[in-house]
Length: 231
Image (cartoon, rainbow, N blue to C red; front, side, top):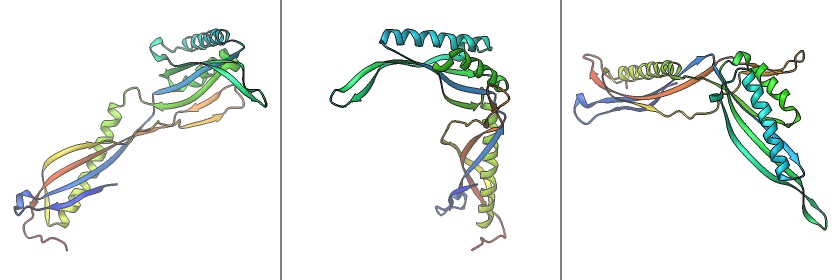
């Protein structure tokens, strides 16, 4: 939907009249990249034991991911933490009951169709120590999709500008300036996720994801002979 940033401006010279319009557009495509946050959390009586257990569990999960075809470049440690587990006891205050060590991995899966099996294998390898913290679908190279979104935004802006020019008894001339507007980004959600009772894994339905673009264009206005402005 177009958002006219201004109707038309005049400085006393017909050739100086302009119309400024902001157009928006979107483009959809099947996502080809799934980003997963998977980690482990281990509780033990000492900090060193918790840390060692988390390291072992993380190594097992990482090995399962590699066995599923995930390359080293697509696995990175995104979080590492060791903390005391404390409880409040009446009359005794806070008491340490153990230590918790956790590690989080950021994983990129370049074949969303096989993601369910890879995730299930990693969860099975880590057992009860595994923690999943979000799945996002997107594009490994969004340039082509974004180009189509810009084209849609341009067409949207031009259609609105043509209408405004006609209402002003003019027609579009040369483009004076073009500026791409930032579009607030947000994680691209999973197209669908449902429990598959016949299997030991959650299925991930990729669906389609979209990218948005916004452009602000300034056109010069040319007078249209014999066509008075619409009041």
